[in-house]
Length: 106
Image (cartoon, rainbow, N blue to C red; front, side, top):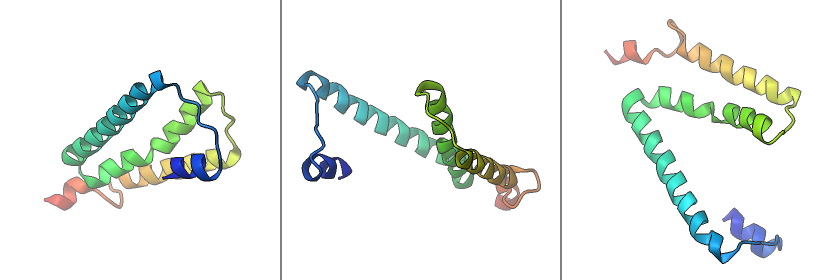
């Protein structure tokens, strides 16, 4: 929907060769299918809480990979956000933490 809004309403130019369209579609289908498969598989194997905790780290990895591969700058606010997120994950996963899914199930 955002794509349609950007190209039609905001007149953002769209430059795509026809030879690139099959690759774009394949990348979209495979990327979406694989991410959905791994997400659902991790829900089955790890449980909801641990899967969501792992899923929530995606922005941290996105920041790290953008810094390494795209030479993006990292701001102080982003570092503070990463520290807050990792602290929250640690609190949830510690041995006597707020949520210990193995003990609560049995």
